[in-house]
Figure (tube, rainbow over the protein chains, first blue to last red):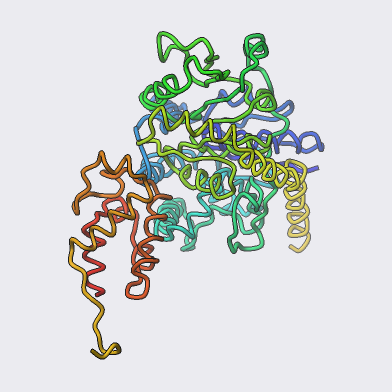
Length: 401
Length: 100
């Protein structure tokens, strides 16, 4: 049996897919660990999964440094293309630099056969590369790959940030090792990703959304008694209160008192009062809810979009930052929904957009088609098979020696 | 007049600006443009709040319109992150005028 380790950043959207694939690997009898900075990850791991916590608590300063990285991404208001600069310069590069030594120490202790690094946790790839451990890469934000085509210079700029850091970490080669040339798994289907020439080590196992622990309380009673169409509204986990206030006040204006049952993901204390047709919770059992919904409104975060399309539901997407503009572009290009501009949209645009996707059957049909393409891509089973092939690769490489 | 030797008409700053303004309207919608004070000094990301997909859509339109005379996509795709963030209408107008 193999020994696998995921190396994850403290970002929910990047962790969730690894929980599904990890659970599948555990079911198949492998040993699976997660290297992370966040001790809270322990409670989310599938049964049998080991948390390999990065700790630098020799002194308080180091410990404080670690903690400040956990929510660093929520600390600044960013929008559009500028957010990519922020993401690399102020989040990813410092985070990767900070995690590197801890990753190396954990790899020495756990001695995995195969490393799986998140594509934005290039320190994980660098550590595996330097230690000669075969590694695979988990791409949880596929639009970043697509950016190569649309805005090649921006992609080049990203790669240069990675190469600079790699140099610092001791890699001489002048190319990014962030994405494994053995196996890079892009967690979507090619139908949703779109056409693009890619090397053969890119695989598309589809979104991996099974095997998630469910333990979020929810007001199912109120939800089930409503006969109105049901929509979920979420702008994910990475945006702070200022964004949410601005965004959700338009949502309240658009849907308060309408013939809709709204489930909204937010701290309920954000406003003193919410309309009666709203259920507001800071966490919801999103995967359990989706089969009972008619549509989703979101920030075009890749995971929420994938989970929604998996259920064949249409979307209104309102991208805010990072790769979301591109994910939203794919939602529109595949006919699965309508896109609004976060800075410019008003309540009435949102209302019109939701009416449009609920009344025009083409959106749902297109979403069902993408949902089918997701299911045909193989999901966690396929991802686990691909990873298992790397254990064989390692064994073959060892025998050659 | 001999058709073959006729020079293509050179557009002035204002004429190019009008064309670009039209494309911006098509990308972000008339009702928003009406409220904005778009000038040659407007930047795409800060002032017009366009995100990357909107900028790509805009550049497609410029390419189709001015296509035979300029390599607009080539010019834009050679821009780095900081240049795109600070890109203004006047930069595009100057580029198109240079190519005429």
